[in-house]
Length: 136
Image (cartoon, rainbow, N blue to C red; front, side, top):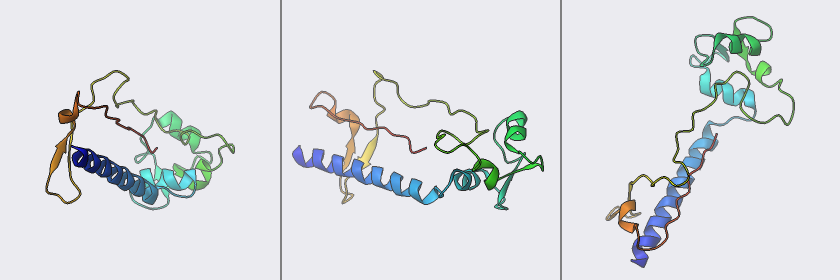
């Protein structure tokens, strides 16, 4: 049982590391870089109204020069230390589990691929810690 627990923990850590590396690769050095990476579908260095996921009113507010495109410089004009989401982005829906919800069951393969572990098999045996995070 100790080996299965150890392998489950190691598998979860590897999964968390993979998610972190993936996130690090897609983030840019500024809010404008991240905004373009996410929404500039045709990779022309600016986001058109068609590419923008929010309402037209938000687009117009962010498009300071009213040229019909949101450019990196317009996103980077936010006040320093403002934090939060870039202007104009719609609020995210909270789709994760709530405190007190039963954790969703899932399966993970061992590092050698010879065994598979399922979360529900650990129920009641010992405390299991699940760490959910958002990298946005």
